[in-house]
Length: 386
Image 1 (cartoon, rainbow, N blue to C red):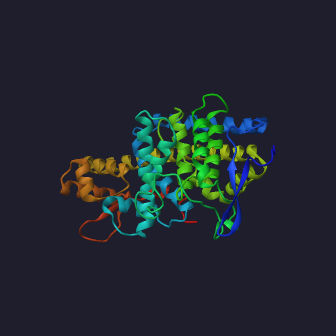
Image 2: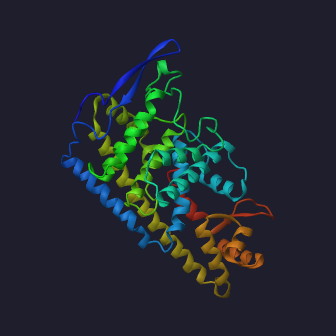
Image 3: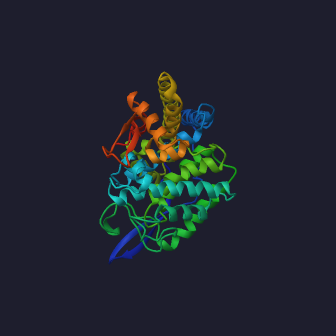
């Protein structure tokens, strides 16, 4: 359904040019969203997929084994959309001891994303609702160091930003003027707190599009907007753990994503955007469940292989458990984590290497780093740089 523009233009004089900035109207849209049979099918499929994902904890003996690496994969994908060039292995290496291996700003940007998500979840679990304070604090962690740390972390912008082009006058899109940002974000916050209205996943689609249109920060809007989806579902009790991330879907469908956001603003075609969003939710939720199943099958296969080595199996199984928790580690970290002596941890690792489960990355005699190869291969799927 096309409604016409979903906001108003506020004309400013910037750099001697007349620049129309777009100020979105409040949510929910008027007239209301049309839930035809096609939209209902998208919603049902997405809701069922999220339900399966929420119950995946019954499949995983330890959900945190999955979350540790899956959150980092999401951080990498979300940052890649913004142009970073780091890899998952480089991120995990950096987290061991700030090891070099990628441009520093790229890796710091990804680690900031992990910290921002964890901080947002801590605020929600501490009793705060999803609100502008939470979004500002998440943004503050996101830009705490590295690239963007000079772009007012944790504060709504006080100057004009734009998307595409070299200046506001030739930009593809100009968000609201800075003096309208607080007003727009207050209205978005009110919408986030409404108990009536569209189903949760539809509200998440509306809120994400609105946030991206307001673009309230000088930098990091895309990453905060994607984080907001996971935080919304967690705050509403839809997902106990933050296991739904749309960055892979959005990375693979970037042009359609931006086209549909423009269509919402220009013609009010919320239905096309929501259908796209719900398709992404379903695909990503199903993908996360399938990844969890594949990892459990991998862990069981390798556990059985290790048990065949006889007396050496005990220490090797403990090393294997440590590698499941962190698929890229130094042997000293593994010894600490398993409470094994360094010699026993080394012998256990030798078993994993003999079985083709782990491999050494550095080629050094000291401070060697070991990788759980097949685990990393599963996680790396879809993380190839754009």
